[in-house]
Image (tube, rainbow, N blue to C red; front, side, top):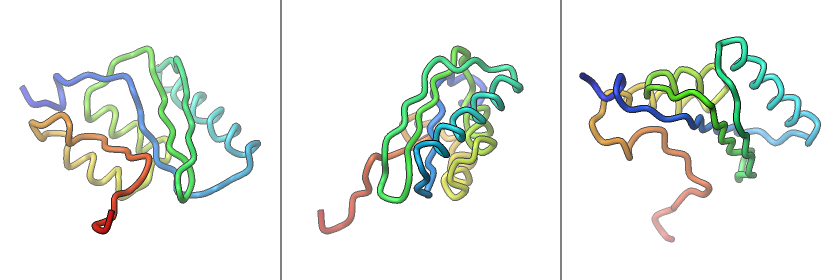
Length: 111
């Protein structure tokens, strides 16, 4: 059985590379909750932090999902498309710590 079918988690990680007003960000969160509800998921908690270009968002679901489901949901919710591409590639890798990486800051070679 591949890792994409037996590794379960309930945390979606979204990287948004645009700054918006608080009202617009709250509307974005509200629409993501509606989309997830429509798809049959229940949002337990949402955490938003500022990043250099925008926001990092963690959405905790009541339901557990496979790696592929997580990658697909993050794509549908508007996650950074390059990040989505790599997560889809990582779905079948055997090392769990290499999937769905989201950093609060980026490390540069000089740091």
